[in-house]
Image (cartoon, rainbow, N blue to C red; front, side, top):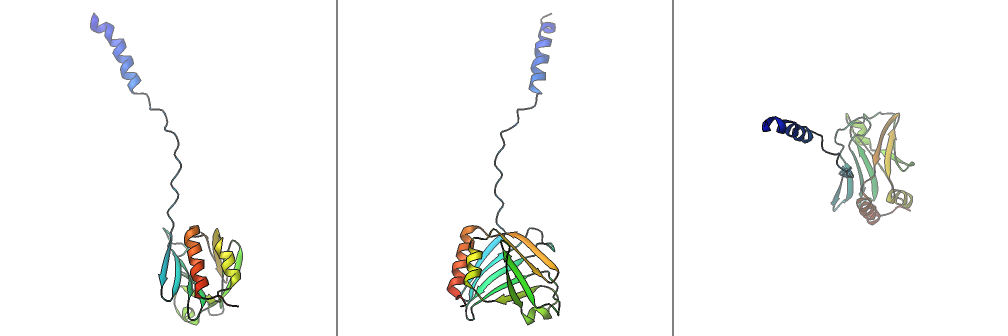
Length: 166
């Protein structure tokens, strides 16, 4: 008899244990790790972007400022050179800068490098950039989120040290 009287109580206890737990409070997502890295050498400074999964839209890209001669360079992987196209544009927050494609990269099977002067306008726009994108002929690449502000500021400082063209 006592066992029969305890059965409903035990059943309720068992059922209450099966209820789902209340939902956890939402947590702020971790900010994504930067895919940008900084490289400093005696010849200058570079920023490299390595996407998790390279694509035609966001291939690996490298921005660099070299000393002697002082030059700003952009190298973009996975772009097929076109012999009739000698300009590559790179933009910071929609402000484009035209660069001359190097003859050596036109001779290669894929990947492109272009160079131009390090100007005060370039450094000013780059310093606060949030988005980087570019084009070569009909090929568009980007947008890339800009490097973290401290990394970008260090890069601009390195470019300024390399020499600003007048």
